[in-house]
Length: 338
Image (tube, rainbow, N blue to C red):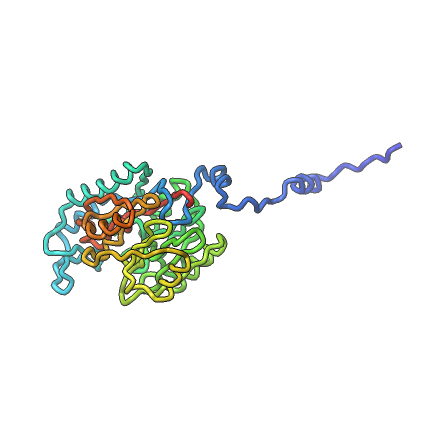
């Protein structure tokens, strides 16, 4: 006759239950199937040129009205400059808000015409004209976003509406730059799925780069660091990827070792026309070999077309006068792998 078994205590039964369902680290957080299952979409990207599926912009609003009446004209800068340097507008003429809106809307339409889903920043802070430049307060990597910490005090606080917008969209936030770290998204460029570069200077510092590098390390991504020259803001003013094996770059702004690294990665460099200035590289890849570019950069666009790159030109010179271009004004959220 079998011995009668003692009843299992509630605590032991509970532990036996969970012994049958252990934790599962695999597949990884950023696995596409897991992203779809848990987060609803395969958020993020690991390159700068794969087909663009979703992008974040911020349409200029009432915060720009202050530029039509406020501030003072400074001869040394040849620009209207606002209170506490929170905004500036190059040239003696005041901004035409209707024209600014028309140009931004034209950029958005060009993206939508290429099948890109355009998301809009939610609740930008008042009097923050720089909110239109959505590239800077966040960096998008595979699996979600890294919230930056803006380098200058007058842009601090822009991080909050990005955090809210990502939460509304359901996109994971993988890290927030904190402590004494400084990081702005215009300082960051993907070279390929395993290599990225960040520029270090007065807007993004070594501590910010260290924190970003630690996050990327979990994805097996090498982060290269280059020094900005002088008071240059971001690497995006000197360097941008336009296809899997082609970049646009002002090589005089980049160190020799980095140019050699590009050769090692079999990335060819095309020189923009210097007459187009920084906005000759401030463009957005929509897919490999297709660029959205300011009509101001017509000479550089001809060089690109001669190299087999398709270019869509849109007027954007009014936004240039506030210091940024199309690359600055767009934050890709989802791209295809390449």
